[in-house]
Length: 307
Ligand code: AMP
Image 1 (cartoon, helix red, strand yellow):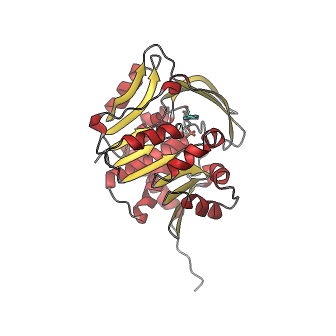
Image 2 (image 1 turned 135 degrees about the horizontal axis):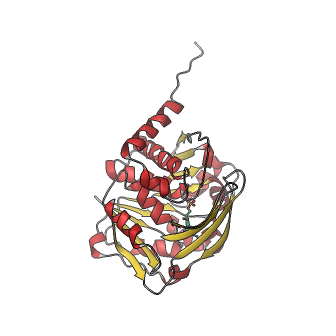
Image 3 (image 1 turned 180 degrees about the horizontal axis):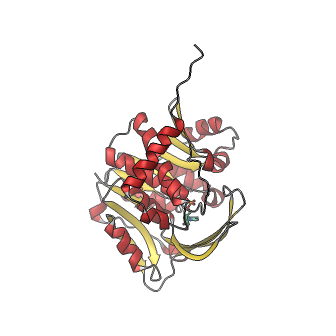
């Protein structure tokens, strides 16, 4: 079994009400790969970076079983750059700068060694690129999971809708689900979005947890009540990385196991927000992840009766 992750590898500048950093490694595929690597390896990464992207970061990823054969390095180019500023509630943010840089010339080519992968994560990147990756795979993966964001809904909705017809699962946040469906109720939104293609839909609600929709079933996962959210950047990518990492590891696509995958994703996201960038994701151990998953179980376990 193997897992392909597609997305950005980037530099970010971040500002929260409490702290600021001018340059930290980020990108959807970076967060997703670090997160998934706690459950599964090898991970086959597809992205593009400039000559400015740190070699140490590539080595760190390689040490965790992330193959970068599919990461194009444009020696005289600049990596994708994104800058975001969070509001007081930390659930909403403004994108201040999105400099595509080398992403503008990205033409993903799937190495032969990546063919035959059973799991594909289309991380947040231009929908046309997501489509290009799917169309190069000689054998359709067992599971294709897609992430996206409002930015692409604003400028590439037609392409995005086409990719939706090609995937099994979509993972987005509540405001994106509302924008995509035109419905305020998340239950109605889920119906509309699932009719666009994906059988499974996960709607993340920040500090309020996540909902998983499949057929007529719904699963509600809590978010861990954290005393402090230091930097929410990458929480979504860490969630989807943990989600697909667990599914790739277990190979079990039942609804019951999807529920577990949502909890693993939630646990990884809860670590991510504790420090700037992917720093926290790099320093935790598998034991840390397991004990956090156990906290999620305790958090929502109860018995009730009126008898
Ligand atoms: P998240 O907080 O999970 O939405 O992910 C934040 C990461 O996504 C940052 O590290 C950014 O570099 C990256 N990012 C921001 N905007 C985009 C975009 N339009 N396309 C792809 N990646 C992006």
